Image 1: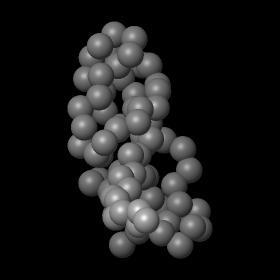
Image 2 (image 1 turned 30 degrees about the vertical axis):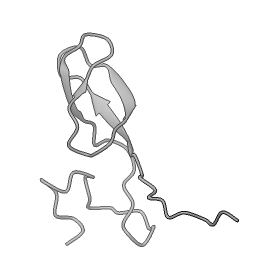
Image 3 (image 1 turned 180 degrees about the horizontal axis):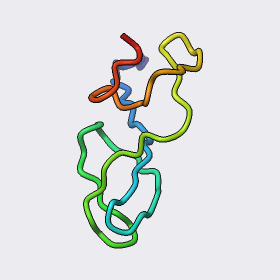
Image 4 (image 1 turned 180 degrees about the vertical axis):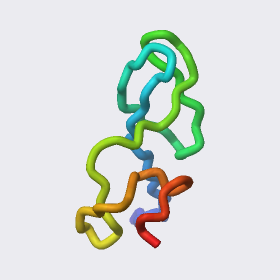
Length: 76
């Protein structure tokens, strides 16, 4: 009789991006946060789009956080 085998679940984040060249905004399913993402319209390398609502780890809306932990500091 076969048993349940161990398996690893990998979570792939769906992130928002904005192209600095053409202004295209889109979402992309990536393996890691550091994956290089190219614009579907013009093919230029894109950066993350940190707009919209940001929530803290407790699930409450953050008033000071920009969503970009590299430049923010609102959670600390």
